[in-house]
Amino acid sequence: MSRQVRRWITGLMTLLVALEMGILGFALWRSSGTQPEALPSPSISIPSTSPAPSSAPTHAPEPLQIGAQVHGYVGDPRDTLRVVRQVGFPWVKQQVLWSMHEPAPGQYDWGILEGFLIVSELESTRVVLSVVTAPEWSRQEGGIHGPPDRPEDLARFLRTLIRRHRGRIHAIEVWNEQNLRREWQTARGLRPEDYVQLLRTAYTAIKAEDPRIMVISGALSPTGIDDGVNAVDDFRYLQGMLQAGFLNYADCVGVHHNGYNIGPDILAEEAPGLPEARTARFRGPFDHPHHSWSFKSTLWGYWKIIGGAKPLCVTEFGWASAEEYGVTPPGFEFALDNSLEEQARWIVEAFERMRSWGFVRMAILWNLDFAPKGFGPERDDNVLYSILDTRGIPRPAFSALQAYLRGLSQDGK
Image (cartoon, rainbow, N blue to C red):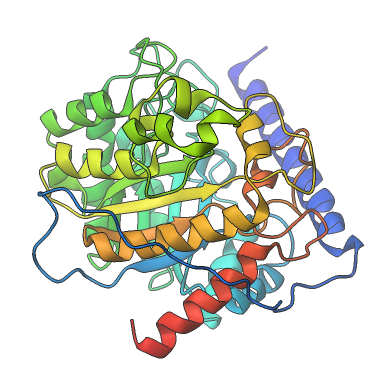
């Protein structure tokens, strides 16, 4: 089969998958006829912050930029942004599938992303985009789950996107979890210096086109796996990025942490001593302490590794709960330990912690609406983190965040 035919088939398959997701997600979104409304806010009591390490910033922290990730490729962007506004998020994050939008070199199909960015501007919502998946034509080994062979191809795409939507894009995260093979498939393997080369080229292109856009380094996946093939420990990979000079090409250091079954103010070494350690069904944080289980240990670890040279941007964080579902996909059993009340409390507490720590510039909740647009809790782990349920009805975290963000707005913070 010729490469041209193979590209055509791949493009058609991508289009069909996107269409199927759109139809299914829109049907799920509308099926119940229930729209998210403000619910009575649960009482969220935030415990006092634990003593900060001695390396904490001594200057007044910048205001924390708060937002949520949405599934903007599914459903009407006006509905999606309406829910963002209902909660009160000033920022929204959307992942951009480069492979979908440039199916052939220099040929662009912006699809629903176009409407999403236009509506975001109309709603006065600030946008951070995370750009992933290189088109097959840009990769000699094929597939889309990895970087382009030529970083200049990504730079050209970014310049075109920014020119088309000038002023509508406020931050760009360059790639996603590049310390995992599933996101960075290349014959050269998981080399931080290769990622920094891509980041450098992207940063230069973005700043030349619009210097106001904040460039965020691709957030790594906190992982205890460090086999060098399927994954590299995020602390070790970050140190490799540092040695390759990545801080020269990022305004903010990207971080991910999707909480397991401990709260945001628990250090990894503290977890085995918690009362929950005696009853938890998921044993990871309690039997095998490691920074990757702990939100606080991960963020403070990144801050220490970079020596406080740049702020952190937590472009994905949240807690999963399967309380009303009773099922999870394999590997996500920790969600069975978390109640909906804990999900709500820990999310609000995490925002408050990041606001007080002083070294986090942006915090993006994972996620707003993947449940009503997804494939069910037994197949789709994104559903468990969503603050809407599969029917589109708000979970307790939804109204807790409404109250929290309303309070910040009234306080002028």
